[in-house]
Amino acid sequence: MLRSTHAGASLLTLLDDISVILDDVSVMTKVAAKKTAGVLGDDLALNAEQVTGVKANRELPVVWAVAKGSFINKLILVPAALLISAVYPPLVTFLLMCGGLFLVYEGAEKVIHRFWPHALPHDEEQNARRQANADETIDLVAFEKEKIKGAVRTDFILSAEIIVIALGSTASATLLERSLVLSILAIGITIGIYGLVAGIVKIDDAGLHLMEQEGVFKQKLGKLMFAAAPKLMKFLSIAGTLAMFLVGGGILVHGIGFLHHGVEDIADLTGIFESLTTTVLNGVIGFIIGAAVVAILTVISKIRGKDDTASSAH
Image 1 (cartoon, rainbow, N blue to C red):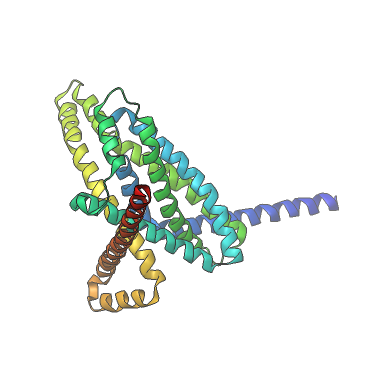
Image 2: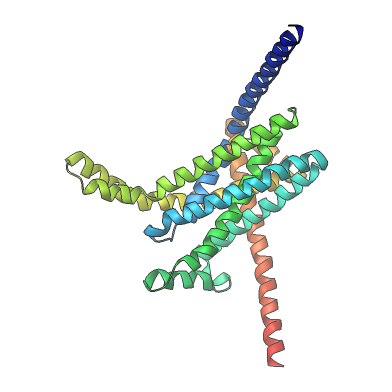
């Protein structure tokens, strides 16, 4: 009888402990989600932008392929973040800085290709994609693989930032609680982001479907959706590129002491616009650093090209 009572009390204690842990995890997950909200908006814009230029019948397969890559990214990042934070926390900051540098570089390259295309080496991949889109006999899957790889790389950096921010909000938690919070966020974010992306890229198809239905309201709504789809994609393309500078610039500014203090000092002078000023300055600094990296890599590429030409001539 005594053993039975003791076992029952132990079970109740265990259930109570589990309840407390789950309650703590729930609260910390909400806090972490709020702190990462800004990055999630950037993540959505960037991933929707990655699908632009893909044929309509290939949009969902591309989104699904990138989503699978995102799940794999988080499957790697969550255990790695937990391990690094336990063994050598400064390494997390260094890796984040590398990711920020990559983001501003990619963003600057997109802007320069758009406005000053002759300033960079000829983009063979872009021309090949255009030819493939124009030629129905060419299988676009091979071309899409490169686009998917680029999208998964970008997702890796944004996912890393989200996980690091979430990790920071659970600094006082136990390893089990941190693991649960990061896992819940990783799964929820991936499903939410790529579900929204899939919905966004199919707005025009939904509009066409409504236009074919009976009823004036459905047809008008369908026309509105169909007309809005390309404008929304264009907006998301611009927002995605801008997000690269804001997110990447923010990472770099926070990681470089004198830049961080300088931005804070200038932002303080703007009073109620302090937050907006900080965001703008992060974006401007991100673009400047990204353009500098593009310039350096372009010069190196040209020098190597000249050396290869000289070698082949001999």
